[in-house]
Structure formats: structure tokens, C-alpha cells
Length: 348
Length: 158
Figure 1 (tube, chains in turn blue, green):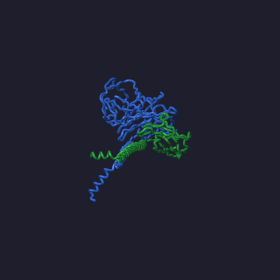
Figure 2 (figure 1 turned 90 degrees about the vertical axis):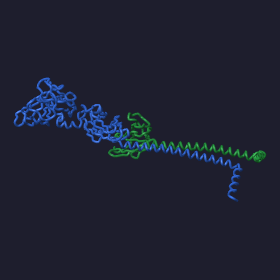
Figure 3 (figure 1 turned 180 degrees about the horizontal axis):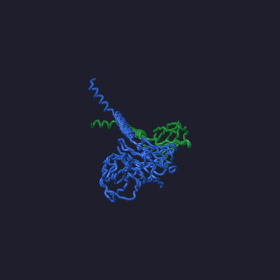
Figure 4 (figure 1 turned 120 degrees about the vertical axis):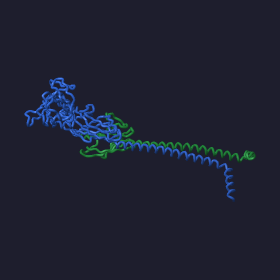
């Protein structure tokens, strides 16, 4: 039989056999069921996988952000106050050296010696590159105070927790505890230096002198001259800025009689002296002298006017001789005297 | 055509064949629709189960717990663990804690202000206390397992 005839016969048999129709319908339904199942499940699986992949990506990103947080700290914990009412002051600097903003949410302070601990909720946000200073000495409102009973000589430790879950502990810590027995803010590291050489520190670069100032009440001091050469033939006033870094947090009072003096040297029996003077509004005010200097406060001190004729023709060493009183927080007053060297003058 | 129709109507045997065919097709269509509906419902159930599994996995992925401070008080035999939920999902509960090969199931979780809570929201901090017997001056690992099955490990010194 020819293939063409065979095909025609097959087609005729197929179309004339009505029983085959249900098989076709059944097959169509079977295909529909299969397509429905496969496509639904496939598309759904794809969408769920996308969700999962998104979550993995977000999770990885969060971990990456967390590892990219970089806060440089230089924090000092100061115990202050004794017993149950004790507090710990946290001072120092926090600098965000990372590429992301960082929010510090909690500060933990632990008294390692007594096994006490406490925490304080914070909300410090540091943008990249930003730095914040916590200091009860410079800006009292910025100091973080944590209630924590503590005793003399206890070791303290503190660390911050960021919102991303990083622990940020101090890079370097000076642990000082109850140095002033709860009498006020504790001592910053620089105060220990001042404890060794004197509470008043001089700003060397602020030294200046005023020339041709008449030694009379109300005379104008004129303009400051920054330099270390003065004339011995004219009346000059000397000026310097000083700051009180007292170790015990005392207020200092500088009284009259304080002076800036040239040490007598060979050829002079007595050195030149500039008595401490009150200058207000650019004018010399004569009378009783009392200058209060609170802790960390910087003040201008003026001396003179004097004609440094004895020192003329020499380079002379000068000493600021300060005398007065130191007043504790509880009101107790004691004498205070300090000698500040460092400056030399060429007197022509 | 008209002749073949006439022959069809006249033939008694053909009527029964047509009826049987119609019944067969109706049965196939009915069964087909039932199968289609069943397959749809089965795929919906499967999809639901699959999406739940994926959601559970993704939620678990988003969980992050950090240990802020762990303090052991030998006199009271009390271990206090301070945590923060640093992940991006809330509802972080503590299902189990393992310290020194001992399991502590579902310890009471509290917020830092002492309020009892069942779980921590995102960025929320809390703590729980358990009473393991530990030797002083040693390091111990602590493992916490969350309600979603994530585990977090830290080490602390007594």
C-alpha cells in the first residue's frame, strides 16, 4: 500500500471513531493540569527564591555595615563620689573614622574591683568624620554621668554599644577614681602635670607687651606688641594668658603683690619688677587687685607699667610670681604661691 | 450530508453510541475539572508550605543578637546576660541557653528597665538570668538559641 493511501485511511478511521474524542479531551485536561501545576509551582518557587536571595543580600549588607563601623575613642572613666550615691564620669573623644554614620545607644561602665556595673542609654549619632568631645571640664553638659557605687582606687572600665551591635571600647584609658573624694568633678590627665609644677599654666604664645603706658589710673594701654624685645627707657606693661588646671579643683585667687620680676643678675642689685595690674576695657585701673580663676578658666594677667631701666642692655630671665589663695569646694581656703618661669626678654 | 444525518437519526444503534460518547465526554470533563481543582489546591498548599519555609529561613537570616555584657555572681550563683537584638527583625525570643553543657529552656527575658517580655524588637536591649554552677577564674562559652532556631555564641570569664 502506498504511504499516502495509508495515511488517508488512518485519518478516516480516526475521524469516524467517536470514542477517541474523550481520550483527546482527557489528554487536554491532563496537559492543562500539568501546565497549571508546573507553571504555578515554578513561578512561585522563583518568587520565593528571589525573596530569599534578597534577605541574604540584606543580611550580608547589614553584616558588612557592621564590620565597617569604625569609631576611634579616647575615653577616660572617672569615679566620683563614694558609696551608693557614687557616680562615674566618662570623658574623652569619640571620632567616626568609618564610612557610615554610627549611632551609639548604650554606655556600659563596670567597676572591675567591686564587680558593680551599670549602663546608660545614649543617643549619640556620629556622621562619617565627625568627632564629639565628652568633657565635664570643657563643656560640663557633655559629660556622661553613670550612677555606680564605687570606692577609692577601684578600676573602672567602660564601653559603648552601637545600634548595629558593635562594642566600642576605649583605645586608651586612664582610670582614676575618687581622687577628690566626691568633692567635685574628677581630675583630667593634664591636671596631674599641674599637680607637679603648679596649678596655673601659662600660654606661652599669648605673651605680649604694651609700650608707653602711663602709670596712672585710666590711662590707655594701647595695642599689644607680640615680641620679646622691649625698651628699658619707656614704661611697658607685660601681658600673658594663664589657665587654672588645679589638681584639686580649687578656685584660685591672685592678689595684689603678685608680680613679674627680672631675676637680679651680675651688674644689678635689684631686678626690674612689673606689679600685677588691673586692665579693664583697655585702660589701666589702679587699686586693690583680686583675680579669681575657676578651674579650666583662662584669664589675662597684666603687669606694670614699669621702666625696665636696670635691665637695659641685657637679655634677662623673667619670673611670674603669683600669690593668693586656693579655695576648695567646701569653702576652705589656703595660701597659694607659684612661680612661672620660661620667658626671657631682650631689654634695649 | 442530509442523507448521512438522516441515516444517523434512523439508526438506533448510533443513538446509543452518541449517548454513551456524550456521557463519557461529560465524565471526562467532570473528572478533568476535579483534577484541575485538586491540582490547584495541592499546589496552593505546597506553595504555602514552601513560602512558610522560605519566610522562616529569611527571618532566621535576619536575626542578629549581640552580647553586651555577661556577669556571673558567684555568691548568688547567678549569670546575667545582657543582649541586644541588632538584627533587622523583631520578635527575637530565647528558646534555649547552653552554659557548661547544661541547657536552660526559655529563660525569663526582660528589657533593660526590668519589664518582662517574650521577645525583643529590632534594636531593643534586654537581659535574662540563669543559675549555673561555675568555677571562678575560668572562661565559659554560652550559646543562646532563639525561637526561630538561630544560635549565637559568646565567651565569658567568671
